[in-house]
Length: 169
Length: 119
Image (cartoon, rainbow over all chains, first blue to last red; front, side):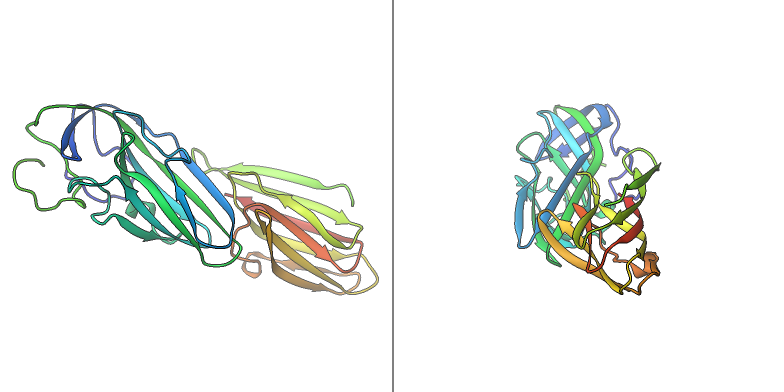
């Protein structure tokens, strides 16, 4: 199993029957498929706007792990916040918040969304010029997963928990 | 307002489809007029613009971008009587327009030819 690392190419990080540790749980990938593309356009922004992307349709089904890359467009500065990211082995950035604008490459804005309660995204949009607009796009893969006992090897997002005692790859 | 012409090309594939829209319109009224409505998932970037002043007086033509219901003048072009002004990509606004592109002029009639990319 390859180590988890940033890559430019968009390809599934996990294959069926591989395992990943998320939120302290071991999950085996049952199926890999492209995630439904997400595209949100906000217009007429004159002041800071808070948007819960879960309410706008960026959500995972139960027993589904989304691996998404975000792309920001528009004259705005965004603060992306991973909600429900409690625990040392889940999150997406090692910190819970990250600033982003349209100059940030999507491969640096990669997040995991697990089920309905872990990792959903909230974004605060601040206009750089008024009136501003923002476009948020997400694409990636959806892993259908099932919880399993501690496997012999598993993947852990390196940017979340680099120093870890015990096994894993 | 004259009869508009419109040409649409689609490039790319998958989720990165880019649509190039070229059009031509003649306006016979002063004040603000709609030039291009941007479909919801897209953002328009003007790549070419030519304004032809068909009146007997110099015209001041403004390009207006709408973001929702809010508007912003992004460009002003002075066009002598009976002549035209052509603007290329590096002379046009870099920013995109998410909702609607409009033009306004203090003289009429005038014609606007444009080419835009919808991303």
